[in-house]
Amino acid sequence: LPEMVFAEIIPAMVAGSVDIMANNIAITPERAQLVAFSVPYMTGGDTLLVQASDTTDYRTLEDLRGLVVGTGRGTLFETILNRNPTMFGEIRLYDTQPQAVEAMIRGEVKAALVSSTSFPYRLAQGDFAGAMLAANWQMVQPSPYGIAVRMSETELLAGINASLSKLMGDGTVAAIFAKYGL
Image: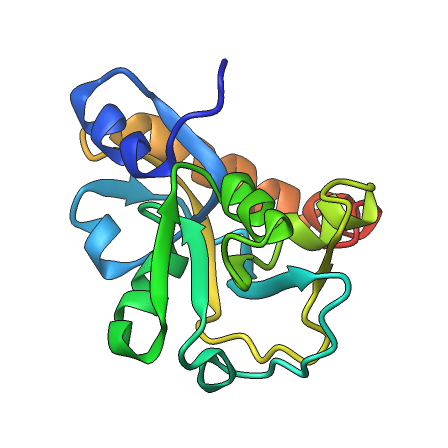
């Protein structure tokens, strides 16, 4: 499947064209009104990526005051930035988080606020040459992550929860996370 625009996934699920969303979806009260979530399988949140040559010690959103920042449309990270939109020189939204990171590498934005779970791994794999993690970034909003299904899919959700409980209980989930540095 081609990469979907994150902001379109929940509407696609509600419409019936997506059955399960199982990739770094934060469980939020707003989303829980639209879809049903599994038990949380991990905690994630935000991290900041900047150009590898940037020596600024970014720790908090305040350190981004007046700067142009980017993130993926429809993400938790857009929500975080939009809480204080006048703090930033501009908030630029991209269809995907990788597009926000690529825009940062090109210099279109100063920093990209993205997933703390997938982007450290991707950088370790050699993706996004020219980008680095802001070493002292203090996560703004830790969030439980779960698997999402349509509200009507109660049997599917029960099966997902049973499987997750088994895999978390026997250490499989922890082993997978350890293998990939999560």
